[in-house]
Image (cartoon, rainbow, N blue to C red; front, top):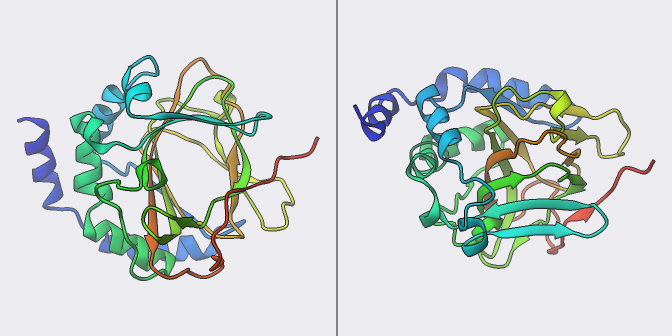
Length: 250
């Protein structure tokens, strides 16, 4: 049985209703701001295939169709690929059958309490709509709140869905996401970026997050999906603004 046949067989059973109540409660009660994690998000055979086919950083696709996002001063350094036609088939399957699945988007809407979420299924907004993220040793993304508006989509950013793809990842490897309260008082909550863990949270002026430097020689890999709304959701400013960087002072 090939990969698509396996996915089709599994997708018949795809239903998030059985965990909806528990995940809504977890989301509301999580600190320092509402968020929820789903471990083993993809079926294991697909998670392995996505991990194994994720493009290495020496693959020409990153230069041809992607970009190296950098902000000087050690603020940010990561590779982004938001061209869905360039994704290996297992990764396209993860997007098309799971992340873009209307049942999943509705699930995220119910869990977060944000109605009418929009997934840019063609990634017309490029990496601002989602795609692949890769971070090499030494790369980081300092504490920040995200930009709030996409000029390409003419919509407001509302929810981050982050699917991590790192086998046997630990605190010692670095590159784990830290969640901060709106007053920027630590310590933050750290979410280990382990394989097949999905993290969901509303992105707004209160949800500060970022990850420390990657310490291992392995590349930190993730699939990101950013969901949008036509009107600003709660705590999202109506006036468009850029990412607000808040480095930790030492």
